[in-house]
Length: 330
Image (cartoon, rainbow, N blue to C red):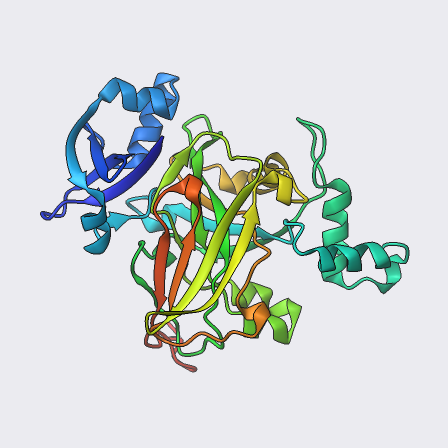
């Protein structure tokens, strides 16, 4: 089952089940978060909750996408109660990167911090079920205010030095009233980062991640396939200027999803009942790595057959929201 959130022309929200080229409304559901919390209280799965409510009106999916009426597939009415985060160095990447790691593995002192944490992941990122493995790199992106709906442009601030895509799979979670995290499913995401800033110094990684992101348009309910192969494309003036395959799923990762989830939700401050978490699991494919520099108006298209419609966003611009010296003393 694949779920979407969308708006009607009058602004009312609906939850829809993808049914080919149509969306069928889940009766009585105004948001996926409400649907999930009701399922938790009922002791039911998300699929069972949808089945119990039943399906109603049908809508043209392509038309809603074209009109940018499709919302992110999970959100919160108060963006401050959403946490957007991610983990890096989680995917095996290219054979060349793996070969380099193995060639240097005999001398820990010669490894860069990047290669060292990658090596730790390869060696200890997939522990036995129910056990904790090595912790991954972790980063914070922002709250729900940074999320851009499918089809819209990323607002790139004037201080940004790059506007680069990161095609990833994200886990979508709601915290139950029992303070336990409940995974609703997964979505294709564009984690979107400033790679020029990051490459200047690895300690700038935290700054480089404080950008907008997008995910969806669909939430895929259930377990993640072991192997996923999608396509990431960059278009300029309607022409494809870069395209590459991106791999995900645990068969292509050096960490298990269970391990990544444990090292996120082990922190008590991330277990506030009712909160929403969007957690990106990392990537190994970037146009930036191939020397591409994006421009305003460029379009990202990330497609993954198992997740339905592609995620499309463009590079936009944003005005400065703060200037040096503008802190007010009370």
